[in-house]
Image (tube, rainbow, N blue to C red; front, top):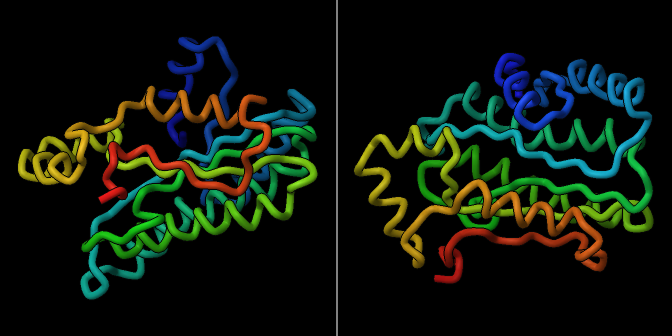
Length: 206
């Protein structure tokens, strides 16, 4: 998170360390790389889960909308992988969080679809580059009850429309995503690399 106060509270609850980071800023990522090396030397698991969305179509989207979503969702994933992979242990795992919209399009989300589609193919390319060292996989959640989505769900019409598209009729929970992350980061998935796993309640099966 970029919010140090939120991170401090979470770190206290989890009994862990934290570092406030803007993934779209290469200097910020370099600073965290140095912090990781100084504090831990190396590490095993990287989960790229920073994300942002602004709904826009190809006519109404501004360059600022485009740049913002590409920089956070796609460039941020590249920067962390580019700077952190060299200090990861062999046998480690990287999880990139994309979206169902990285695999199929939706009207009114042109920049987000482009960015998340980029994350899916970036994952495949990285998996081949790192095949002898680190496994790289991608998660493609559908609608997940994150704070951002709960804020969108305050619009009852939007919530009804979003849930109506999901065959299981409900949004995924943060725990649904976290348990899949844990599986892909563990030795239980030792033969899985370069793949994308959907967590969408059957939405893309339609």
